[in-house]
Image 1 (cartoon, rainbow, N blue to C red):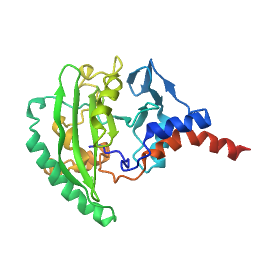
Image 2: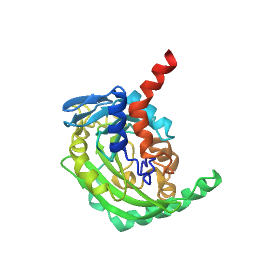
Image 3: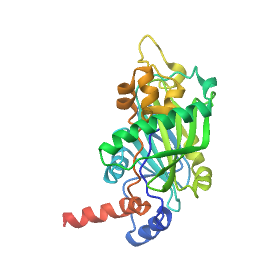
Length: 282
């Protein structure tokens, strides 16, 4: 799982802080406004709905890096001024991912593998002085939409007594997959799902980059399937058994991240960075 870092205990949620900051400062970081179709690069596009704003690669990576999150594969961040959620979009160009195991997504088996792998990973985290993580169970079991080539799931997790979750939607492409991670509080996830759904379904691959256009004669094959996408880089046990832990770790970097930034931190980025830069230039 490609976990995203977000502190969800803060009462200062994005929507409230962002709206207030917008009124006070009068401008946003460079962004796109829906409705419009936007090419994000690497063959990924999004039909951005009305009322949503999108920060492209440069701004998205700056936001993620400032709060200590993974940014090297980021394509965009989508949100709304009044939202209490964020959608982080990445492109993992690891090669073609097979969906031949779509009928083998046993939720119980996958959860057991995920828990075992997380226990192993916690040993590494302990050496780095990082708090351990606990997999509590599925918030939404893994499911695959064959027609759209979309794999999705949501896991309840806990660290240092604080519950949180990320909801993963993975759109398969010809040379890898696009990952859309919905970040929200446990209490707010249902509303977030409804509000963010149009943006998530709007993420597709452009012609020439689609999953069904894979050509084994010229395209790289990742050698993995849907099960490995679910368990991903966080599962040492599975990866070790299959003999490609190093490959998964480097390709996905889907390691659990300690929640480290308040929701208000995103609002600061959205509305405060340009003002600070302008002051520094004077």
